[in-house]
Image (cartoon, rainbow, N blue to C red; front, side):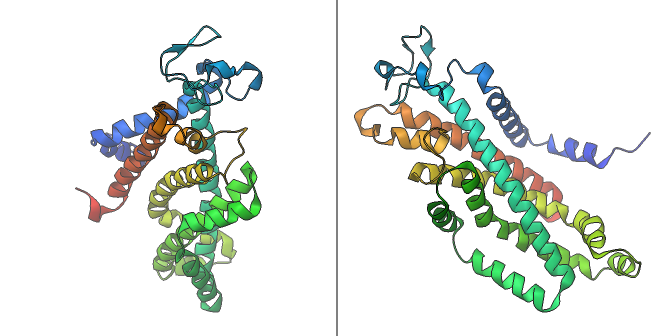
Length: 292
């Protein structure tokens, strides 16, 4: 019988955890509805011509002037809240994945490069990384967002700058442990360029902890984006993410119109918790010491 591939073994072990499997299903479902938002949502919340102020702040189950039922109610601008949540999920996931990917690329390159070069450059790079890690990520992201202004590119830059240090520190620790092993010494004795030794030999053996950090940091990036948008320094009002939807309804919480903030908040919490549960299961599988 042909032995199972590493991916097949990993998936077989992953399926043993019902909690992780359910969390993965939730993440896939939320990504799917976010991608299909223009087809699933009954209203385009970005089309101002379709918004009717008379339908604003209506409770769940209200039948609007357009003739369809607002199953989650409407917000202060008259947007169908279910549609706004689907589009908000789309933006939050986009920001989290892009910022997480950029932070991964920059942080891993710096960490691997520092471990490979060594000496004063390694000490300088890692001291800068340690200095940044001394500050909370939300503080750095908030300052950078305030300086750069609103917009997707500015927000991605702020989120990337606030998170790349976590990847750099993890990559450096893993690469430093691999740097002194015999197979790296053998690779260095051949006429291979340094970048091939780093990315073809060292990086593949450093991927397990980096994958775990990536899953955690994507969830953190989504939470950071929601926090910045809630505070009004994230995305512009024309592109409402889940954080902005929560912010828009916060002032109506005490007046009984709880649904404007509560439902986007539930969607955000479910997304972040599901991603973290998947990340915890991956961590347990790639680290034998943490296997139950």
